[in-house]
Amino acid sequence: MTPNEAQQAFRHRVLPISWEPGKTGYVAAGERAKAYAKEQGLEVTAITNERTVLRELQRGQENELSQNALWGLKTRFPLHSAAQPFTAQQALWLIFAVAFVAFALMWDREPSLVAGFTAMLALFALLGGFHIWCILPVKLPHAPISKLIPDAELPVYSVFVPLFRESKIVEQTIASLKALDYPAARLDIKLILEAEDGALSKSLEDMRLPAHMEVIAVPKLGPQTKSRALSYALPFARGELLVVYDAEDIPAADQLRRIAGAFAVAPKTVACLQTQLSFWNRNENWLTRQSALEYAFQFKLLFPRLAKTGVPPLFVGSSSHYRIATLRHVGGFDPHNVARDSGLSLRLARFGFRTVLFPSPTREEATTRLRDWMAQRIRWIRGALQTTIVNSRSPFRMSRELGPRNFFLTQIVTSVSLVAALAHPLFLLWVASSVALLLLDLPQPGQLWLFLQGLYVIVAVFAFLAAMAAAIRTSWFLGSGAWVFTILTLPVYWLLISIASWVAVVQYFSGVTSWAKTPHGVSRVKPQIVAEKKPDKTPAIKPLIAKPVANSPLAVKAAANGPLAVKAPANNPRAVKPSANTPSAVKPLTAQPRPTKGI
Image (cartoon, rainbow, N blue to C red; front, side, top):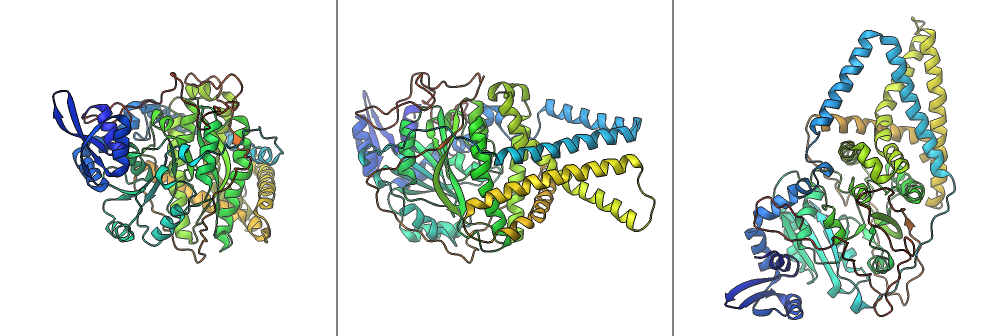
């Protein structure tokens, strides 16, 4: 097939079946494909069903699909891919740093330890100041309201739901998708599961899914990550917009309609709309309450402040809405990153696009068991570590693309937070050992180290009070309920995060590539799924907007009227058409084993 024919086959299920001089006959999979062929002026000579065409496409294009899913991002943008743990330059710098530290300790041990200790205290003080900065009041920028779009003019919306061993909650997943207030004819829902997951496949077959829901089985290839499954399914998406939901996500029924209206009036530089995540079982136990407090801090304090300065919200991953052409342009998902969206929003920012926080809720299930929480947190931190290493390959270039201030804030959220989490338990052990020596009347450290310990206590108390103040401020967003015990026991939660950080670092440097599956359907609290009625009008929406990235060589400039001053045409309230400079045309798969273009 030609590139255009391949694109029609993957996205619209229309592909050539017969050739004659000056004439090509096409087979269409279902009425929707037949209508598309008629619209494009293609002669349909055969009709089949979508499942048959999908199966044959996966079989006939297996090599191209697999190669693109695994290596598409690395082929196009190797500096942004986590496929390679370290580049040669990074490896040399790491060896140099280890050798320098070893030499300094051998040359003069005590001054070297004091210098390292002072640097760590500076990082702790920086994090304390960062928490204080997050709780300061901030005036958010104004944003246009979301336009109400008639059903017939709504864009096609692709919904990706990666599933793996989700038989317990698959009925809940389907129910929440059916409750979406969006025309079925404009929906393109992909249930993405692993080919080896026979139990889930059988459950979906027994449900008799509606026509706008399609099951895509991902063959066993490469690292088993969610982003790899999403990369494999991306060529089959036919929508203009794309959202990724987890299996347990329950979005607001009108979320797609409202976000489609917001995209319609936003400039093309706005590539992603991130909704607000919360938990329906936040009061189930101590662990769920701690997770709820952490999420509330991120979405109510941290992300709005970062959006004010232009830094994208990092490490979200779920309920993220994209312009699919822009997503394909920047390389799509990173199949080698174990945390799905870890780094994608940062990659968008480095390419000159923006992320907007959108005030529409999506409820999730918080992990209720410590072993599940630990496995999930280790995976998240490994993904954050991968993102940190990927973006440290070209720090000066990244600083030019984001701007010095945004580069500095990004390093605090990623590198500094990770180093502090690793160092925190070591400092606690050090202070505890000194106290034990004092109580046992054993030889104590010298005056210099006692002074440094006292300095550490002062910095630790400052950072502790700043974090507790941020937690108290966050609890105001969680409504009624006793959060005193949850806040007072935060140090225990931080210690658990430190333990998970150490395990994640050990796994990364030992070459572990497995993906820890978080079980769902464990909570005793069952969510309520209510299908909302179609609204007569859409209320005003004021999303929180990340400013355009400064000094980026790949930046896409907004309209002259302002970053969000683009209005919908009077005769068409949908999205503004992309300009000629907007790289929205993406070639589909070719027959080459290693494609150089995204799908």
